[in-house]
Image (cartoon, rainbow, N blue to C red; front, side, top):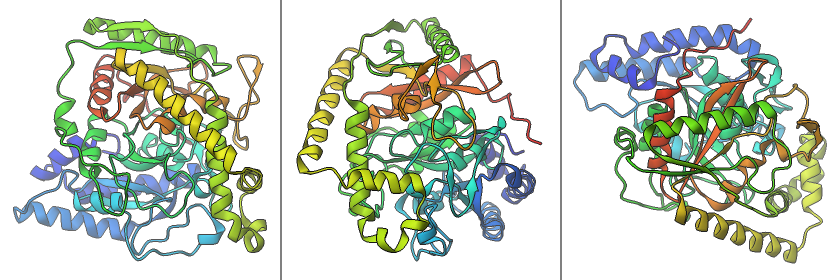
Length: 466
């Protein structure tokens, strides 16, 4: 019961073959057993969940109109505000903060009928790609408890992988949905920037971060996206587009597609050999659909530098007023980023913006010729807990960003991008393939993802946690 798709859950709840209460109780029981081991949830809301599940079942019995996600147990990343429920942002500063309103995406999920299980762990303000903080500690990878689950939506990724809820809401400012989805062996979608309206507290990541679904089945991601998509006046970047519903779009398999793949994007310095092999094997599978597949020589420049400059300067702006009082209680890695950002000036920021425009132009030119871009999601598999990054990849010394560098360009350019499991390495750790689409074309990303899921399913593999 804890590992079936949300899509199937909805159908069973509608007929009351299995009630929302039954699904919810089964998952709560599993959370109580497994969460003390992996620390995916930082705050649970079981009594609220039970109440929401009962109301969902009552609505079915009364013949009321049902939402897209009616009665489905769901988790929310602890970076999103939730009305009446503690929201810490992984920070000692907000350790006891209880918001008086929901974020837009959370409200839309509630309107679609979800049952809220609780909040999932995240690094402080989502500032890094592994998940630990000074409030709740470290989240472990369900596939190997000595390894990282990635971040910053690491709690969400670990929860879905471990069967602690079929749906999770994550956010992605620099791979934060795709990176943990890859390391935890689940499907994660970063929609086009502006597809889902957001309430933003800070300057940092405000033009980089996308909210999106983290799931075990591609169709579940489409359902979540249908529930959350759309503009709101509070978010000037959100945009209205008259697209078909995504859950209907994925039922269509494109007759013709031109797919390019790259194992370095012209700047990623090292990639694990087992990951390279898995990606090459995976892209060849698309040829059975008569889609064109070819390697491309895409060359993106200064991606890491422009991304780092934009993020650290914005973090410095956000945290400067807090540093005198809170420096000793802020995660040391975040303090270092803030201190680094203090050294940048206006010309530095303009140079980063100029480079952003060049990256956008290069990708725009690529997508004039191709429908989809395939890359590894990460350059490295999950590595040991307690580290920020693997010091070496494929025998080469690498920067702290190299291991998740494939994700960064598409936060800069705003293209939709997903991570889908495409294999496991010799240690039994998941490997993710990144599927990137044209601007505003999540439909094709989802269609390609669904096609790959059909020929290379992974859901029968489950982590053994003890």
